Image (cartoon, rainbow, N blue to C red; front, side):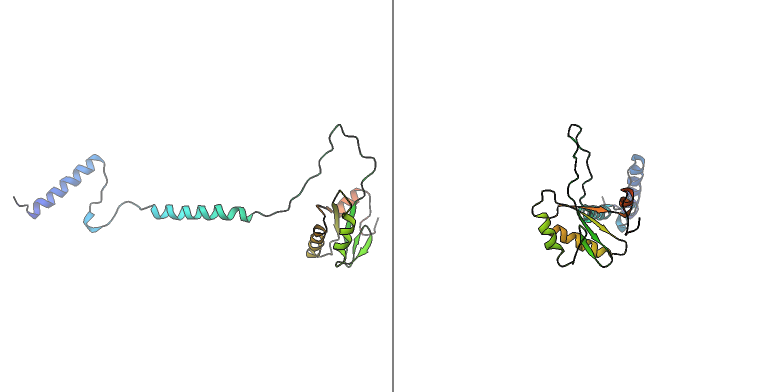
Length: 171
């Protein structure tokens, strides 16, 4: 029995009607290659690549300085009667001083190394006026780290005023 072209067309329509009733979606023009569903596979691939990029880049983007905040003394420890001898590095518009003794930037590291080699507390306090360039302050702190300083504290003008001191030689 040979099928005629009209029978083939009618058979196709019956198949499509049956699939519509059963709730299946299939492209009516399968022979043309057109699709009615969106292909999301490339979208998923792009999203996975972006996720991996962000997972790799995020830890590298975090930068910062390690700081340690002052902790209150334990309640059962007696108070210290005399303050420890502290080192203050002061940077002003043309001068650098260590504990009010002038020093050049070239001699700063050796001077600080001499001071800190016998000390157990390797903390220095840095005070700079607003006229000193930021790069010079960072360079001085880097030299201090190279000389063996473990912790660097920053002293501001407001802190000096609150302690009852003078800022810039003015009362």
